[in-house]
Amino acid sequence: MSPIRILSFLVLLPLLRAQTLYVSPDGPLRSLAAARDAIRKARANPATPYTVLVRNGTWRLNETLTLGPEDSNVTWAAYPGEHPVISGGTSITGWKKVKGNIWSAPATGDFHQLFVNGRRAQRARTPNYGYYRIDGPSSQDKPFQLRYRGNDIRKAWVEAGDVEVVALLAWAELRMPVTRVNETEHVATLTGNPRPSNKEVDARYWIENAPDALDMAGEWYFDKKAGTVQYWPVSGENMAEAEVIASSLPTLVHVEGANNVTFRGLDFRHADWKMPLQGYADSQAAIEAPTALETVGAGHLSIEKCWFSELGGYAIWLGRGSKQGRVVGNQIFDTGAGGIKVGETTQRPSEADQNFDNVISDNGLHNLGLVYPSAIGIWVGQSSRNTIAHNDVHDLFYTAISVGWTWGYAANQCHHNIIEFNHLYNIGKGVMSDMGAIYTLGVQPGTVIRNNLIHDVSSFTYGGWGIYPDEGTSDVVIENNIVYRTKSAPFHQHYGANNLVRNNIFALGAEYQVMRTRAEDHLSFTFERNIVYFDSGMLLGSNWNGTQFHMDHNIYWDARGLPLRPAGKSWTEWQAAGQDAGSLIADPLFADPAGGNFTLSANSPAWKLGWKAIDLSTVGPRP
Image (cartoon, rainbow, N blue to C red):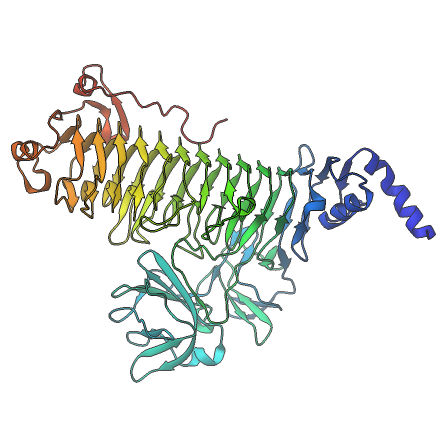
């Protein structure tokens, strides 16, 4: 062994004997990869547990930190009392004022996000606020043909390159570069093809990264050909002192085949988003967006009390074959896509490749979907026996919690999931359509949605629902939830079979309170012992044909004092048709429904119908 290697071994020897290593600016380990490699070299037994304590500072990753089976049984944690940052970004320096309010600096590579002093800067956008509108129906031509109005799109942008259209199409978005502009016919040709579901009339869109779109403070523009980035500082920013970070790596950490790996107290930032050359057309949930920390075939992985922010895609993905994972007590915010993904879109025949028995609890997720508006707060695909509990999800443009990825009654590996004690609010924010705070798909025996507090759900056009069992959702129990202030309805079932909806409060839907879309030959749902309270809109919406639903022992109250006409029938006719024989039209006597207090008085008529008090005292993250 050479003298240098002997010296390096002697320096590391005390650390390795203690089975605790330190990543520190003072060394001897000055990177996460160095700590990983040191453990690999020192280990005689892969079952020997190790702890890597990371000291204060910003630890920049030049490449994704990859952990394999040989990296099992390791805890990666912040040194006690410290707050280390794991960054996938690079610093942009050498700023010079070039014209007016515009500053410029040299920049290389391919990045899509810029953060100035910890604030996400706006990629040059036009219009600055609001949207342009596609002229008529959105295109199904291949490639996409965007029919624009006036001079909203300009031919000069094609020469500039990297000018992108972002269009919102019902529940999905489309992002594609502009390749050709016919100014006579007002048609812009984009790089890629739309999906069959990418349809909307007069759809909204905006332009990003056009050179003449850099026209207000806080915006930036990347000229890849010239190798420069331009920025218009906001008031108070000194570009000679500002910390400017460009996102670089789409994925910060990739764990594959490792078991018993823990991440605790670390702050993950600056993962970028990427786009194929042909652009990107979403099907649903921005499921193809990249993820900052992702796992494949990982068992008993824990992510605890970490921070994820300033990201381009999702924060966490427990992917194929990942089981018994724990994502607990984390803060996820300021992300380009959503928060947490569990499972896949693909069904796996081998149990080794299946995803199940994960716990997602006590996390705070907010301000999501800043690049991919259709992203989900917590998404569960083909995965079973998971618990999603005590999370706080708010301020995103699409669904907060989505469970299932099988449309209709086909085979499904998503079942026996528990969704409970989550606080979900400010969902949709009037941006996307066809969405709900809790959204489900497919036949899911054993799945329970209970004791959730949901409020303030707003869509752009149709579909601002609280709890939304969509296509084929079956055999699900929905109980003890409080849902109020929704645009379309607190509860809507598209179609499904044998769902049980009981002991919920559905209140203050703007348009409707309870909706059902499709009548089928089997029982859609049983709706019993619920309280439905409203002061606008109608009681029932959409399709109530047939008799394949059962409603009884409910309380209905229109605070305006108007007579109820369920599905166009008088109350007497409705009961004669076999519905709500034991139900009441009565004021439930809430404490303050307008203020969100749905506590029932002692003399509420609901108690006589067997109402059970809903305890939401521990809803949301626990201390």
